[in-house]
Image (cartoon, rainbow, N blue to C red; front, top):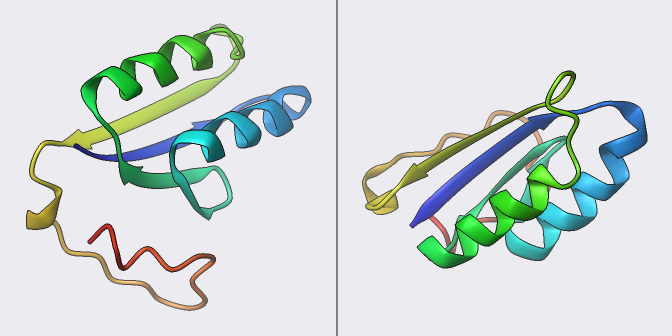
Length: 87
């Protein structure tokens, strides 16, 4: 499935979040990741994210779509990393 993950966490947890998310998805912009994940890998990522975040302060939003190829993407300005193989 196609996944977009966005996070907003405290400064102390930013490096851990970046490192973890880069293990599963492509980093496309500050605190924004995208890529293809299986259902199992997505659940694994969610469990690991829950081990890092402070649920009283931090926010993680995960958009997922079983049919990601039906989405369109437009980039204005500089692209951090090419993700043409995803969409």
